[in-house]
Image (cartoon, rainbow, N blue to C red; front, side, top):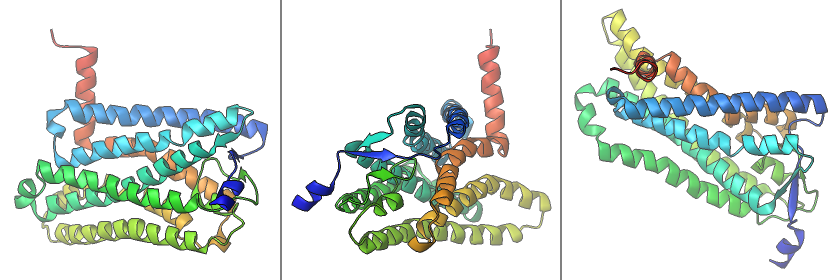
Length: 313
């Protein structure tokens, strides 16, 4: 413990996405725009689901949870990026860094697991339609919505604990734009193989486990769709899954490319680009994808907007 106290600094310094001044200005403007779209899009989706009785179904209950997660997820990253870019002070306290890592890993893991639950919901709706209401009852949906948060924050707490037990004596400058685990491991003067194994195991259990459950659900869904005789029915059923498939591909593809590659193959610049995709870009696109490709959501949004603009007399 004495060595730990001696090697843990009071502050870390985030080097950010770029040190080029004009790129920092352009980047800041882009992040402000994307963050505004993310907040507006997800809040609109949350409000629409809340005030539209037609959308009070398990599918949209989980979609609301996804929107809430996206708001929290991007809010743990973007404000720090903007403050770090626009201010000459690049420092972040140890406590702030720990809290950001805890929230980032917890919320990110919750989103990963929630996507698998949403795939299960589609499996029950398409493959067990006669039992859908009895299976996906209110109590069961609430339990399913809580499981990702509990498991993800349990893992997050473990990862934060073992990461901050390391001595950081190589440098106090994090070559990243937020407190992420792999960049911090590079700053330690102790062998980090145990941390890396823990990170790979956690990612394997959560990300690959969730992806496997999603894949199994869609194997059954596709098999059920192929048995349908009407091409119109096949298209109608598949269209309810296409938005979720797009989001799953974006999310799992980016997160696995960082956490499941060997340390020797890590490229800091590549990792930064991929991290921007799944921490900022994906949360911005999620409500757009679900709104544009979902007729029910579009209809409810248009109806509610008409009522706000021209309320009935």
